[in-house]
Image 1 (cartoon, rainbow, N blue to C red):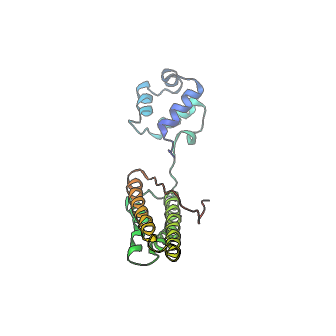
Image 2 (spheres, rainbow, N blue to C red):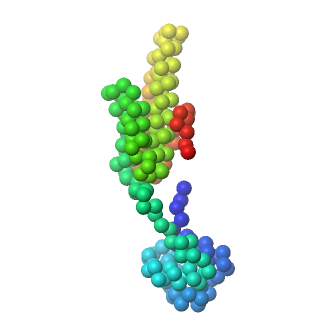
Image 3 (tube, helix red, strand yellow):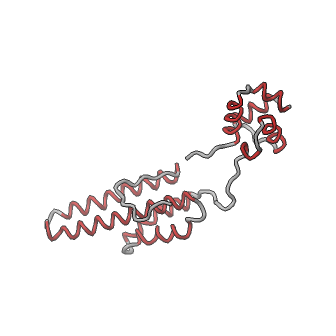
Length: 187
């Protein structure tokens, strides 16, 4: 989900009103070059300039300026790594692949909606993996000898997908965990 910026909002409202950059410059006494630089995203204009542009477009200043939510912290690469990498402790401590993401989800979900979304997806995926491994181990009694391959495939699937999502979450703040059951549904 792309967040709107001042330049996007200015271009949108200017085109919505049907003004060219020259016409908007005449209405607002803001130079054409300044409007061009704002629309290209080269500068952050002063509040007075934004007020003049809003007045010329007959809109509120809040329609142009994008304010960050002060309660929402910036997305940290360290937390994204912790959210997606913590389940690897499940190799050392039983059920840590579910308990640690659950703890991170409860502690960081209020700080940023991205943390909440990613923690929920990680928790759901690893709960699904645990369920699949338990079913695979129960199948040992039904199909002895072949469940080793099934259990190994589940472990390999979980490891590969977790590593792929760690890299994706750190670089693009996105993740995709297929085949996961939604134990925790999104709001």
